[in-house]
Image (cartoon, rainbow, N blue to C red; front, side, top):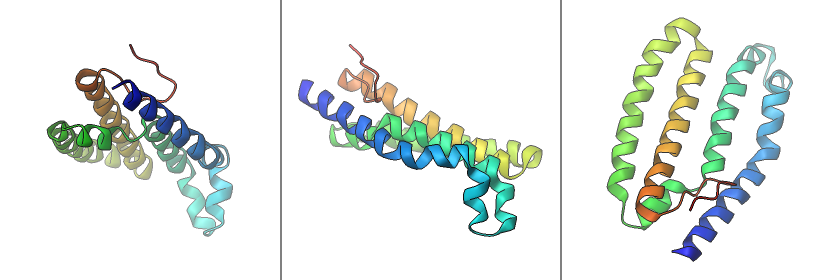
Length: 138
């Protein structure tokens, strides 16, 4: 289990370090990047920043769901996926009428964060460690 914990932490750190150079420009210069696809796309700059934050959380948690699946805890992944899918639909129904594309981005990023953090919680409970990068659990 100690070796699995080490591999999970190293994997999450590498994923975060690999994703960081891609995600940081998306958060700092989203309008400039979106203009490559046409002037109208720059309107989605705020949504791109919100989605980048969600993906940063995704990268920081590493491959937590495959970790749970391969360790025999696939029912937690299944239940978490269903609950988060419902959560995402409800948030979209609430946020899109209020904030349009930014509401959809908020709903998606919150769902990604919830799904990965919940899976990390279950990893902590069932495996005795959380795979979150730079988070050393007992």
